[in-house]
Image (cartoon, rainbow, N blue to C red):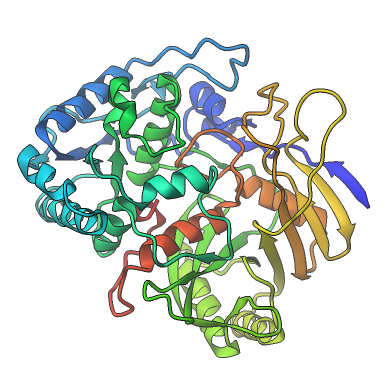
Length: 478
C-alpha cells in the first residue's frame, strides 16, 4: 500500500492568473472569461410579489459587497467583493425594470396545502406557465425563481440524508420528486436557465423554510454561491482548470444511471460532456440493464457505442474539432461489451488516446486518520493495488487551515479499467474536476463535475419522455 498527497489543482482566472481557491481568484483577478464575458446580465423574476421584491432588494444590496463572517479561518469565509462591473465577476444585474411575473399568494397557498405529490405538481404548473411566458416574450439571461416557502417536498429528505452532494449510490432513485427537479424537467426544451432562490437567502428569519438538517450559510457565502451560479447560467465562465501548455486537449465524459419513476428494472443512462474550459453539454442515452454477474447496470455494446459517439459528435459541433484524448468516468464497472463499444466509437473518429475509469462513490469502506488534530488531508490518495485507488476529495484543506466538514471524510474509489495514463494522474484529474462545481464556490467538492452533473441531470431527465427534445446546455440543469 502506498499513500501520497496530491497537490491542490490550480484554477485559471482573468489575465492568465491562477489560484487554488475560486473565491480568492475571482476577487483578485476576475473571471477567466473577463475579456468577453457578459458584463450586463438581464434577469427576470417569478414568484409572489413579496418574494420578488425581497430578492431584488437582496441582489441590489450585494452589488457593493458583503463583509466576511467573523472566523478564525478567513480564507474559508471570505468577504463577498460585490457584483458590479468594476469588481468581483466584473458583471452587473440590470435590475431596474427587469421583467417579473407574479404568482398570487392565495393561489400558491391553496397549492401548497395539498398532499406533497399534488402540491409539487401544482406549484410546478404555476411557475412553468409564467416562466414559459418570460422565455418566449423577453430577452433575458437568467430567471430567478422564488421558491414557495410552504412547499415541503422530497428535497427535504434528500438534503437531510444524502450528504453534501446528494445521493451517492450507483443508481439515481426514480421515485423521489421535488420542486427543483420537476420544474427543470418541465423546462428542458426552454432556452433560458433558471436560478431557484429561497426566501431564507434574503431574510434570515425565514430559515425555518430550509430542509431538515440543512443550516443557513453566512451572508457572504450565500452571495458567493448564488452569484457564481447565476453568472455561469448567464453564459459566463467563472474559472477553469489550469492547463499546462504541453497538455493535449482532453474531453471528459461522465456516465451514470437512474431508475425510471415506475420502479421497473430498466435503467437509463446519460452522459455529461465537459472540456477543460468548463463547458458542459448534456447527452441522453438509452436503456441499461443490471447483470447477474455483478448486479451493476451496464449498457449493451451498440448502445454505449451510440452514447459515446453522440457525445463525441456533440463536442465536435460545439468546438469544430475532435478532442485528442477522451476520459470516460462511469459509476459502474466496465464489462467487455462496453469496452468494445467505446473503442469502436473512438476508432470511427480516429481518436487515439483513451482512459476508462470507474469512480466509486458509495462502497469504499475505507477510512484514514491523521495523528493529532484534523481530518485526513484533501488530495490524499492511497494505492491499494494496481487497479484500486482511494482518493479523498474531502478533508483538511491547507489554504483554509481547517477541515470544512462535519463528518469523517469518505473517499472516492478510483479504479482504472482500460487506461494509458498513470493512475495518479487520473486521480489528480478527478481532484481537479471536483472544483468545477458552479453551484457552490468552496474549493472542495466531493464528486468530479462529470459525475455530480450527470446525477443532477438524471434526477431531472427521469421525469422527461424519451420523445422530448431537450436543451443540451448544462446550465439549464444545475
